[in-house]
Amino acid sequence: INEHPDETRESILTNIASVPLFLKCVFLINDADEMTRLLNTSLVKNVVIDKRSINVWLIAMLIGKRDIKMRAVNFFKMLSRLTILDVASSSQSRDRYSDHEIERFVRLKRDAFTAIYTMPGIFPAILALGGHQLEQLSTTRVMRYITDKAIRKDRVFIVLMFDFFASVFLLIGYRLSIEFVLNYEDENGPLEYRDRNFLTISTNGIAGYLLLKEIMTVISLYLTSRTLGKRYFKAPFNLIDIASVALLLGSSNSFHSDSHDIEGFVASFTMVLLWLRLMGAFKILNSSFSLFLYAVVEVVKEIRWFLFFLIAATFMFSDAARTVVVARGDCVNMEDDPEIMGEFCSDRLIAINVVMYAVLVGDVALDYFQSSGAMIAVFIFFTFFCIIILLNILIAIIISSYEKSRQRANELFGRARVEYAAHLRAREQFLSPKENSDFHVATYVPRVARIFLRLSYVTVSLIALASIEYGLFGAVQFLHVDGSHIIQSLSIFAVVVGVIFNAYGISFVCISLFSRYKRRNPDADVEILGRIIWVLQLGLNLFHQMLGFSTDKTLDLSSTTQLESSDDASSDGGLTI
Image 1: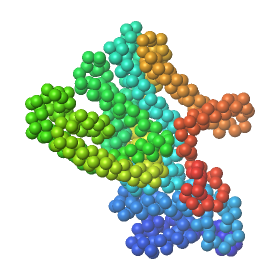
Image 2: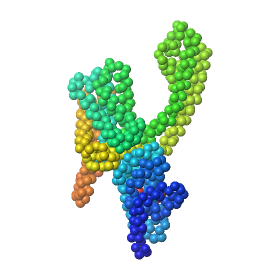
Image 3: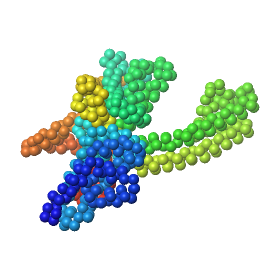
C-alpha cells in the first residue's frame, strides 16, 4: 500500500464503485443520521465523484416518490459541493493537495458531470421533478454544467438567438400592420405595396416556424409522459408562446378599419401576447430580467384571492350606491344633474362599477357623491375600506412576494434554463433519425417519420429566415412612405434590428467556422484572419453585455485553481476544487 498508493486507492474505488446500486442504497438509508455519517466518510465522497458509480439508479430516484426525489436532489447538491478538501482531508500523504491530485480531482468531477449529462432519460426525469425541487436542482453546479452543455453549443445558441430576434420581428411586423390599417385600410400598406404582401408573408412565415416548434415540443413531451405534456400547458409562458402565434395566424387579414368589437379585442389581445412572448424569450438570456418577470408571476399568484375580495368589495359598494339613488328617486328626477346621475342610473350592467373603480384608482369626482347624505356615507366607507385599508394590504403582499422572488432569483433563472434545455433535447430527439431513447421518441415515432419531420422543420426554418429578410426588405421600402411618423419610426427600428440580426448571424457563423478550423489545424498561420475574428468576437461580447447576456457564462470545469469550499464562490461558474 505504501509503495503503490495510487494503484491501491484506484483498486479500492474500483471495487466499491462497481458494486451495483451502492450509492442508491446509501441515499435510501432510512435513518438520516446514519446516512449522513456514511456520506461524510472520505471513501463515499470519493465514490460519489467516480463516474462508474453513476447509472440508471439516479433516474429511478428522480421519478420516484417525493421523499426519494429529494434524496436524488441531495446527491446532485453533494456532488456539486465536493471539493478536494472533502476527498483528501483524511489522507496523510504530503502530496494530497499537489497539482497532480488537483488535476485528478478536476478530471474525476468533469467525468462525473459528463456521465450524468450523457445518461439516457436524464432530461425527462429532471423535468418531471417540477416545482421547488426543480428550482433547487437548477442551481447546483451539476445542473448548470448540464444546462450549459445543452444550450451553449454553437448550433443551439444561434437557434436561441434566432428565436429571440424572430419574436422581435413578429412584434414589429404586427405593429406596422395595425398602423397600415389605420392609415391605408389595409395591413400591407399603401396601394403600390399591397401586391407584394411584405408584412403578411413575413409575419406568417415567422409565426408558422414558431408554432411548429411548439407543436413538436408538446408531442415529444406527451409521447414520453402525459404528466410532462400536461405540465407543459400549466406553465403560463408556454401557453403564451402557443396562443400568440396561433392568434396571429388566425387573425391574419381579419381586421380592418371597419371591423367589429370582437376583431378589435382579438387584435389587442394578440398584441399583448406578442409582447409577453418577447419577454419570455428574453428571460432565458438575462437573469435580472428573469427575476422581474417571475416576480410579477409570483405576485399575481399571491394576490389572486385578494383581488377576488377587492372586486367583491367594489361590487358591494357599487350596489349600495345604486340602491341609494334608486330608493331616493334620483333616477326619476335627473333634471338637476343629468350627467352625474346618468352614471348611477344607467341601464348598463357595469356602468356604476366603472365609476367606483375610477374612485379606487384615484379618479375621484366628489360631485358624484354629494346628492345626499347616504351617498356621502357610501363614499366615505368605500374610500376608507378599499383605498386606505385594502390597498395598503395589497402593497404589503406585493413587497413580501417580491422579496421571496428576489431570494429565489438564481433558482427561477436556473429553472427557466433547465426547462428550455429539456424542451430543446425533446425537439432534437423528435427530429433526429438516430435511435435515441432519452424521450422515448424512437418507441412511438418510426424513423422514416422522424426523417420527414426533420426535413420539414429545416424547410420551415429556412422559410422563416427568408421571411425575415423579405420583411426587412419591405421595411426599407416603407421608409419612403409619407404621411405617418409612426410608420416611418417603426420602419427605421425594423431596419436597425434587421441589420443587427444579420451582423450578429454572420459574425457568429464566422467565429464558429474559424474555431473549428483552428481546432483541426492548430499550426495554421491565420494571424490576419484571427485579428478579424477577434474584432467580431469583441462586437458580440459588447452586444451580449449591452443586453445583459454576460450574466450567464459557460461553466468552466478547469479554470479554477484555488482551494474553495463554497458552492457559489466562483462567479463565473468555475469548478470548485
